[in-house]
Image 1 (cartoon, rainbow, N blue to C red):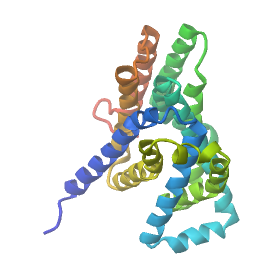
Image 2 (spheres, rainbow, N blue to C red):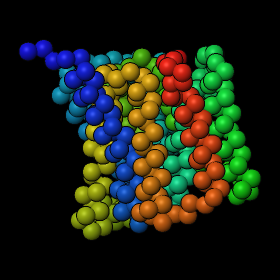
Image 3 (cartoon, helix red, strand yellow):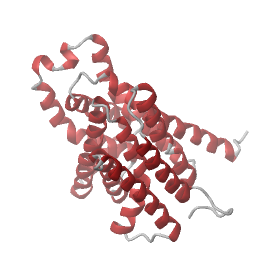
Image 4 (spheres, rainbow, N blue to C red):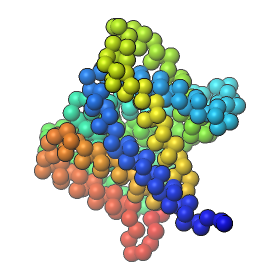
Length: 294
């Protein structure tokens, strides 16, 4: 019996929702590891991810494609650049959680979609319609409120969206399978990570720390790879607009974790800032007057 079309859509929606929810809950995992230096956590995340993605690549029969990427200087160079972007993004996130700035991380992730639209217009010469321009203006107003209220724009609020937009732009122009691309990126960074870990006193937290910390550091591989696989599964089965709405699960959950679990202060300035940003996101994402978002 053939499955109805909506069945595949529902499966895709569930997979994407699980991926975004997992990313939203990531701060809980990294908070447990806050006693471990952020660079050490990052090195483990990259190294274990490389091991797992390499296993997934070969188990899915994509080993030949992986080898072809390493023989193609152009694609390899593009993935080396994207690897630097995503590793910087991961490092910022780990540092933010360890140092009580998860709320800034959430705000930066809210800004990412419209930063992508803006840079797409600047770099890729994609045209902005009036509605997209108004949405970006609302988000800029929110950031201006935050800057005027606290006297500055937290660097994380800028670093998060720009590093991930850079990553997304590079992955857009480099023709490579998502899993193979992640494997190449992590494999390129792994030698540096292993060298850093080898220089850690007593082998670092993995060897000298308690058993739960050792297990959690090893778990960084599946924690990184599994949501990405679920996301890729969902992305192939959902409309882009649906995927766009679901992506706000991640920063929304992060914001809740920051305030409710970590006790970070949510001020009136934050409330006004988030209100402007949500208004901009709603204007950009949600259909108005029955017209689909284009």
